[in-house]
Image: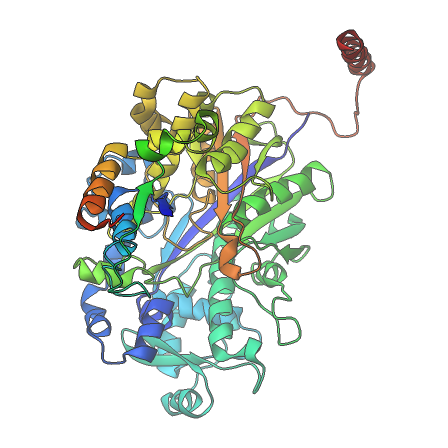
Length: 87
Length: 512
């Protein structure tokens, strides 16, 4: 199982990623203090992109890939995975 | 083909600091849950004066005094850079202070539900006697009530209080003893919507010079619902506003679609005029009480003023082609359909490129896109980013994907075909419609030829569907050619049509 995110910028992607790995950092929801350590990726990361049909990816995500700050999202997501991912 | 035109507009704001403190949902929920909270204590210190609100650059843009292109030149945050010599009245409307607006609420109330304290009412009356659009209506203010009576209505009879400068100056009574659709709270919100809609329509009539008695139909497109317990959203704000604005020969109806409603309404108004059902149709909406101070907690946290302190309202007059004003291309309409899907790419394709393709146009053929024009001064500190800019980037990215421009041109596209956001975060108010007033100028006396109005709405908030919605329509400079009504299609045109049809049939047969 893995979690796939589509957040519009690095900070919110990081928050969601942290929630499903180290637990909800805002302590607001049911995952507060629950360290699931799940594998989590953003839709613009190469780990996901390289594993799906390129045409479908282009049709559904190609445009947003151009708009989003992909590098900072990758950096944030990698950092969360390195720290908290158990799988 | 002869298309309807944008014949006039009206844009108004109302400074409502006390309504924000007491009736905005962020504040009223906080008061119910934590009456002694630090946030509530901080409200007054973070509240702007009327003069500050008038001098706020985005507000000057909203009422027609500062073109969006000039707003771009003012450094952000805009609240720290006031416009010098800013005035209450602009080319498209005005910024009304709260006390006068309470007078408008009382004028709009035909069931004797709005009570204002004697002395306060007298002050308001004097001010409205000096207002060019209301000097003849002051009799509708009726009489005032004593302070004791108002306290009694609030304390013992479930009335919603009306505050001004922190003092109780009146109240809105409930309209029924048990009907949950006619509580004081709902009547308050509905009268705010009606009164601000009326103010916008009055400005439209004033600025466009139209004889108000020639308005045939009004489409109201706010986000409130009026009715009683047996028909909670029965309606009809449109006719109520028409009555209040003196449009004696009009009827109307309400159109709902969350923030997308104004663009839906514009398209439907254009359709009614184009079909010849009505000659003059007004699209109108007043402001939303609940959204005042919506992001207040973030604004206080960042020690900035509560910028969501104004109600917004607008009115647009759609009429038959006059050969001068911008036409509404009813053939170039975009729709987010049930099957469109929710990916940003699918949304932008359905709303932006689908209508362009119908007209054989490229993304760069539209001079200005009017999208969700939320003011980034408000949204950025609240973590919602720069909404219009994000929309422009998506439109540009789709242009790159379609091979209509280079990726390197993306930032320049955002500036050239976009605008900074200036509208208050009042849901339906920022959605596509804020630019229509400037578009009327830019597409006639200005140098532009095409503008696209895009409205989007979050339908899922109503829990009836998970879907989102949106529609768009193209405005275009008038070529000056007006088709005579009833002239129909010429013989030559019929011949051409037959030839085209024969060619299509032949082409199909060749394929087979």
